[in-house]
Image (cartoon, rainbow, N blue to C red; front, side, top):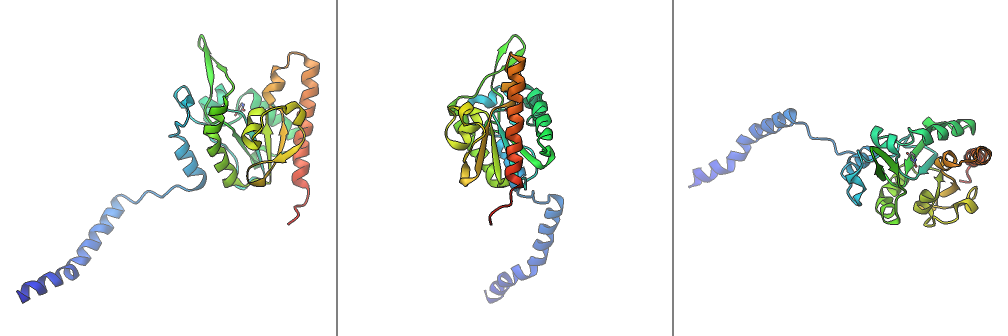
Length: 235
Ligand code: URA
């Protein structure tokens, strides 16, 4: 019995190197998947989001894009047809106009984080055409945790709400965007939010004179955003 007991007691000591080698071999064969962090985790989790019904009709969710240390974050409404197919924000006609106005206002798009209040494309079908539909309050609320995570991840010095949907998601109020545009309100975590209109609004204006005036105002709002960032921080 004593020998058997000693044998048992000795077994782990004798076996340990064998186990260690087996574990090492297994680790080599299947290295542990790195736990995704930051934007990678957000993308991965967002890909599985079904918090509202919009995921069913969309090709894919469209996460925000831009540097993690961006000072400026622009928030739109939701991906359009082109963004839904590309999986990237602001790559369609509204994005082209926005890029041009950003450039004219001296804002580097590659240094800016661009995202949307809602990450899936909402549309109705007219024949084979997918026509944009504005997201409802429930969809904006369901998607808000993603937007807040992006704000928390990037911690921009300034947010710009492009249109009423983004204003609602960032300030809690979507009304009166034409009255509030050009002003700065408080957003998530106290981050300032500059309010303005959405570039699609300009593209939909039927009167070319009104469209030109509104384009100039959006350009000025973007310039105000740049000037806000150019001011020295009080810290
Ligand atoms: N409109 C938006 O609000 N976001 C996009 O990404 C494209 C168009």
